[in-house]
Structure formats: C-alpha cells, structure tokens
Length: 115
Length: 110
Image (cartoon, rainbow over all chains, first blue to last red; front, side):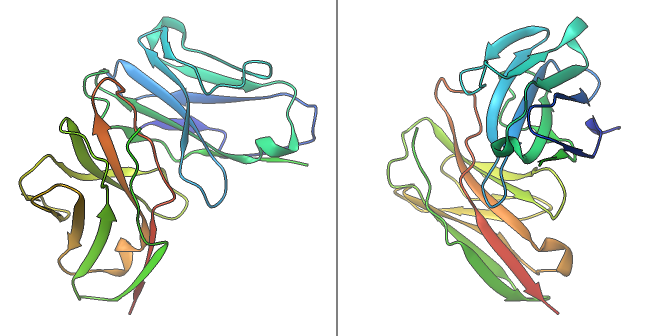
C-alpha cells in the first residue's frame, strides 16, 4: 500500500515570497491533516479536512496560510507571503475517517526554509 | 486538553529493554493513551494505544497504571532503528485530534 506522498521535500524561499506544498493521501482515506513542525517541537495541527470540507482550521494563520482539498483527494497548502517564523517541516497525514483519527499516517514532510 | 509529561531524553543499549514513561494525571475517563514515534527525517508513525488494560503488538507493549495517571511504553529489545522521538498523546472525547508535546528523544547505543 502506497503511503502519503508529499512534494517538494525541501524548499528554500525568501521572506515575502509565496510557496505551495502538495499532498496525496492514502487511497480511500477521507480525512486529511496538515501539521507544522518547528525544530525541537512536536507537530502542530494547522487544518483538518473531511473529504473536501474543512473540519477544523482554528490553528491556521488565515492571513497568510490557505489550504484546499479539491475533489476530496489531493491537497495543497499555500503560504503567501512567507515570514521567517514559517521555517518548519510541513507534514501531511491522512486517516480512514474522522472516527479513525487516532491512527494517522504521515508523509515524510516538506522542509521549508525562509531566509 | 489533558496534558502528558515525558522525560526530554533517554538512552538505551542495543538489544536491551527500554521503558519510556509518561505521566497524565489529568486524564479523563474517555481518554485513550496513544503512542507515536518519529524517526529522523520522517513523519510520526503510530505505535500503540490503550484505555485501561495493558496492550501488546508487534512493535511494543503498553503498560497502564491502575489509576491511569501514568503509562509506560516498553520496547522489549531496542535496536538502532528504534532511535526516535516518542510521543505520548491522550486522545478521546470530542476533539478527534492528536496533540503532540515535545516527546522523549530515545538514543540507542550499539
């Protein structure tokens, strides 16, 4: 079974530029998550989708971050404009359902460096 | 959200058992105790979970105190590939969210 795919794996941008990350969840998984992991900390949930609807985006900095999950499969997370403090690993995860959110499968992450 | 407390780091020798502790004194009756681990340069992966009884699977064992205020993840024979950050997470109620702390960084010496 293929795991969660993310691209790119690494990205370096200057502050005030924009960037987008892509995630392809495990086939058949209805729930998709984006996390931000700053160095030395555990992952922090940014947004949670159930199919193509947003379940929770309370931790998403909406003035600069946006995410979508068209057709309930792939998802993109965008940052515009980026700030230095956005340097982090962005992890995508999926689970079979909201009820199964306790078992999430994570991708390898995208490491973003903002200079 | 109920919180967990874990040591920042632990060390083990290869092929020896490892006991990773977690305190969760404010756990509620509906909270499950979950463990995830994160290998270097990878996303977290599910390890094990339990509610009241001790649990075993192919990766590890979970021992839960009778009052549920603490638990211990047991790796029966540590290998170099078990070097990772181990997260103890309380999951349940209406949140349906995994809330990660800083975890325990486990180093395994050959």
